[in-house]
Length: 159
Image (cartoon, rainbow, N blue to C red):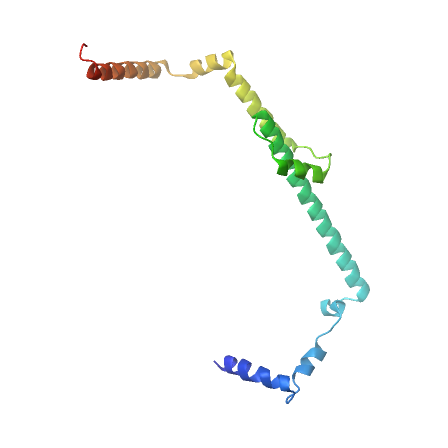
């Protein structure tokens, strides 16, 4: 409560110039950022250069990662015949032509492609049949046949 009263009454009176307390605070604060950081002018300038260089490196790395992801998305869009994205194309153009898909992601895509090729082939279908339980398959088939018969009997008065 006292803080509110002091801020409401104290600040307007200090602006009038009766107390003159505001000038001391301004003089105590250093105007030079190097002195504020506790460094010499040369050290501060060197520090600022390092900060700018590190930021530029981080930005370049980030842009490169984004371009790699865009390249992977383009590969996947081509693989699954999806429409192209202008945003991905623009990202790749911005990063330059030296963008490649990361090896780990490329391996994952290749493994998925070989799995799909194996499943699509006739030999892949035979392997799936070998992995199936024949008793379970027979039970499903007989259940389906009996279900069809019961539905047909309900609908057809001749049977």
